[in-house]
Image 1 (tube, helix red, strand yellow):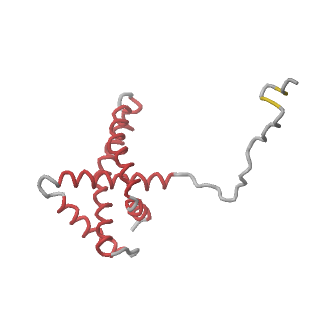
Image 2 (cartoon, rainbow, N blue to C red; image 1 turned 135 degrees about the horizontal axis):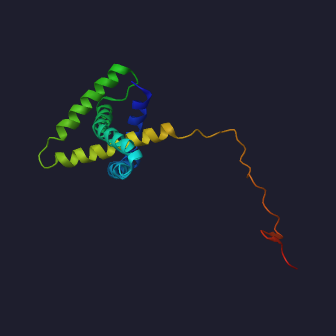
Length: 155
C-alpha cells in the first residue's frame, strides 16, 4: 500500500471537503482542459489532463470502496488486509450502483466524493511545507504614528 493511497483514503473520510472539491474538479477540469486545447501549445496538456481526469473517475470508486470496506471491517495498516477491505468495499459500491433508478445517483455521489478525495490528497502532497521555527515578525517595520506615507503630518 502506497502512502498516497493512505492519504487519499484519509481525505475521503473528510466528507464535506472531499465532496465540495469533487464538484469543482468534476466539472472544472474538463472545462479548463478544453480551454487549454484551443492553443497549439496547450493541446498536449489539455488532452493529457482529460486522460488523467477520466482515469481519476474510475479510481474514485476504488477510494470510496476502500472507505466502505474499512467502515465494515475496521481500519488496518497492513497491505493484504487493506487490499481485502478495498475489494469488499468496491464490490459493495459496484452492487449499489446497479440498483435501478437509484444506482446512477449513487455512482454520481461516489465519483464526486472519490475524485474530491484524490484531489485533496494531491493538493496536500504538492503543498509546500511551512517552516515551524521561523520568527513571526513583520518584514517591514511599521511607521511612527506621526507620519504618513508622503512624509510627516503638517502641524
